[in-house]
Length: 351
Image 1 (cartoon, rainbow, N blue to C red):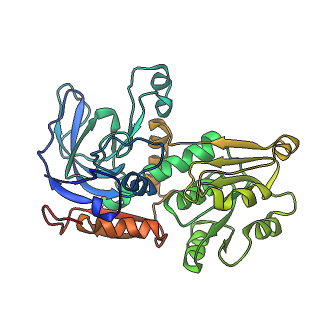
Image 2 (image 1 turned 60 degrees about the vertical axis):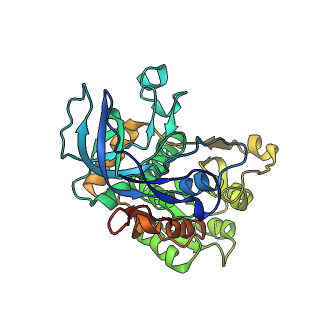
């Protein structure tokens, strides 16, 4: 079979399609014939490398996949070959207190597929049966693959960490990104009002179509001033932050007394400063968040099935153009997500 393999960190030249044996599912595992893979900014970090973080190279990248059950390992029940499925984007031990209590994302053995262990950018992948969920019937394979890691991340940030309430106001950064577009919809679903930022007028328009009450091009205006004009001098109840250093200071300026800022990323830089006096005088909550539980994923997929949440896809490319997909992510040229399929991909092609 064909797979993408990253053997060492670096530029686009480190992305190559290799021929490897088709894996056999072990006890309790399911083999899935992958039909579509959605990329995340995480794929770029894995390829480029992150100072101080170890990735187990060589590594098959990517976390989000949809496909068809191809073969069952010993002891698997409740799953049939031919079933259309999505793959939960991380694995855990299944035997610790966190896993038993439905907090598998806090398991000490938790690994995101394509980051801490081999991922899903292959024609066939084997995963534990607990990672298999039915594909929402109304979605195509590309759409289903785009409904996983970003939606799970945004859901956990807003529902579990921020505990968003009807009528509250939320600032969502990079609202046209995968996680940002999910956040706008999830906030709306819970009755919140959304102000979004984006980098182009086209992306601003998308944010409004997704349900943002107001959206601005952060390259043209000072977003924190526009947020205050919209929400009033009191500021917003919550900030959905995943940009990092470039937006951190002004994001804090947008927070109301007792406001909550939740963050899951630092694409523009990870070192920030803040005035601790404002933190305790204003009663702010600064919340970290990463991924979410499989139970949360199952819940949000129910909303995807009903159409109350929908993935946004910019384009679908063959795996032979995976380098182009990475470049689009790095240059922030996507309005939504980029999805890869094996269609028209040639064997053993350097990409």
